[in-house]
Picture (cartoon, rainbow, N blue to C red):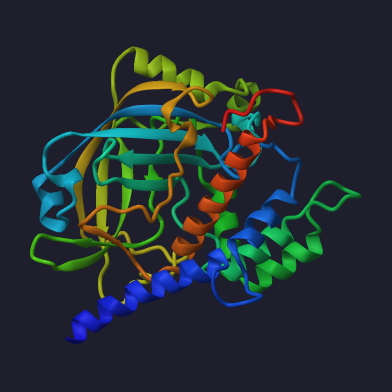
Length: 349
């Protein structure tokens, strides 16, 4: 009964956090509308596109689970039978025409399962941890980054005040300045960052995080190479690689130990934690997002299949609510016939 009560508390907490952030409860509280609105206010408008990670490409392939993965979760993805995958690679930022050689973050979003099947959607990033632990801190970070109209850059006083209040954000800044840049989407590791719960066939639950670890060797892009790189080099590189054959990642699941932070994505887990290779992702095709199947998919990380469940991480609930808000806004803009105001192009989402 105590275990069931604990599970219920996690589920209730996740649902309450989502409802709070989405603006359904709580009155004048921080909502997804306010968060996405603050993001929009930090730069030029790009109607019809995602509010973050706006530039990307669609990809497709399969995922095949391992017996080790099946021992952790009853999700169909781990059955050993290949499941169809629809995905998207992107770079960080709201500009759908941004230069790849200026974007620090690489991202991978995936949907396991085809039409009519239980789906599992995930949105992973190349950074190993989040800069903040709460939705309120995330909102404060957005405001601190707002460009000063006089300089076009964030107010250093406001940014320093934010960093002083949130030391882990300073650690994230150190990662951003010192970690090597990858020269390809195909050789980058992508991390769930948030914790989830895997549930096996007997109902046993384990807190986990996972990474998609590339089989291609990592190659760092140095400063000179970044300077010379084409603005769209990541998509060109991916198409070239796929023309010569599939590209693979192993899904490596890390199991939490007692005391690990399962509701704070700003706290990395030690490298000594038990890891399991739960399956292999194989991508075989890429196409422009303007016409690709990923264009209208909301890669909401809380769309989960049986065998996978949310943790109580409030950032996870906030991401889900903000993704929904962004999706609804761009769909509304597209319905109204609005394209990218800056270039006159059609919306490619």
